[in-house]
Amino acid sequence: MNKIQMYVLDDDNLYAERLAAFVRSSEFAERLQVKLFSKWEYILEVIEHQPVEGILLFSETFYPLLLNQSTSLFKMVLSETIANSKEAETKIPFLYRFQSLSQLLSRLHAFYAEKNHYDKGIGMKRTKVFSVFSSSGNSGKTMTALHLAKQLSFRGEQVFYLSLELVSAVSQWLQGDRSRFSQILYYMKSSPDLLGPKLQLLKSHDARWRIDHLSPDDQIREMQEMSGEHIQLLLDTIIAQNEYDYIIVDLEATLHPRIVKCLESSDHIIWLLRDDVTDLFKTQILHKQLGFKPNIHFVLNKFTGILTNDFSILGKELAFKLPYIPDWKTVSSPAQMWQSGVFSEQTYDMFAAIYGGKDRSATQREGAAAS
Image (tube, rainbow, N blue to C red; front, side, top):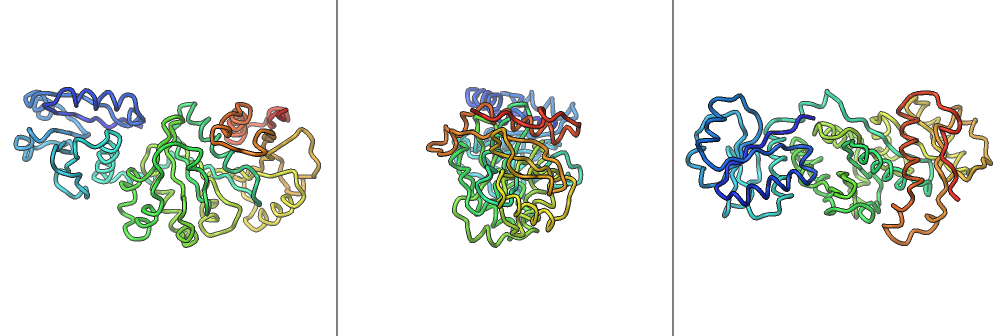
């Protein structure tokens, strides 16, 4: 993705340099490239003699000079007194200078995204959707989805983690401000055209793993009321941001309309199994109900090295076997979940086996059982 060029004209050099340093050291480094100017004459030279696109962020000192200045750059004002503008329809939005830099840049990016209609890029799909599903609980969906997101991020991919469980514990495992899922639901229903820029402000970010994420906390009734159309809108909106290589969706073991629509919209479905006769029976029934889709990949989780059930009744080979982690039998802290390097690495091997599309030997298709 091409970075947005941000031209900063500020009479406070220390603030401008701090802003630029923050961009370079944060997740915004993937989105913005900052160029600093301290004098009106220098930015005027750029505006009048160079074909430029992007953002012109300037302090109120220069407002009278730039108000009617013709430029292809999207103007925004750094203000010491005016609160943040709320709508991008404002001719020149104002951003409050003394808010956190992360919030300021999130608002800036959201305004720019809305003003330039990034949602027109929906048809140019770069983002791949991987959903993690199972026919019954306790299959390790969340563990698998989170570690896969982490491994992809470590390899330089831009990842969005989305939980569509009725009740999600993801906020315990991922850092960052708790996402305001209820507000996302509100914009889905009342103002879908604003969902894109609002998503920029309401999503969470884990700086450790460099993962953007969104998950419900206590919106049980609202989650039950979500329709398939809402899910399609949400996925299309995330894709339209043109920021992410992968969306990893953590699903629950139901056929609620929001789950079915996500499965239908996924590029690949990682269907987790346990070596358990009841789980195998449920999988067989649900698989038949959903249809024998080529993008479904059966993955055996908690593999101990020995199979006790016949998985050939599914009519499809196991794509991978993830190892059993004894330390996860009882999880007592968030840190404990991230401590298995074996499982984490195996999730990426699973991804490579599925997405690589190449025949692999049995040893390549399974993870070693953890001792």
